[in-house]
Length: 171
Image (tube, rainbow, N blue to C red; front, side, top):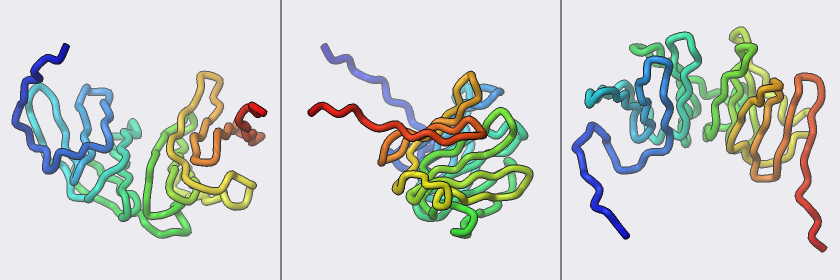
């Protein structure tokens, strides 16, 4: 039933991998304790942020990196810019980063979400009646609706209206 898995040596700094993404050039970005880029058996240690929880290629040669306790970083392949101010981010624990069809970056974290468009941050999850708690995942459907997976349920946004989805009542 079980097969032996071939083990390869790598440049992983720890055995904990929390984020994986493939960019348009087929590089695999590995978030662990540091950021690692891999392709065709070539390993490149790109950066230093510890405890990476999420990575996202924003299609402009930049990589967004979310961390567990250090906020968010933007890397252009060489230089790192730390974005950590709480008025910009939902918290210093980032769980999800998503780049939508309009060019807006959505950031989910321990205490809700933020978004950034044209270098302007918006931290409105507390003012719109968004469910309290963590935003664990963010995606966009083909109909351009943004979906938020939270620890308080599911929420969608069509750029006009917000919808909360309640669980079925089994009583």
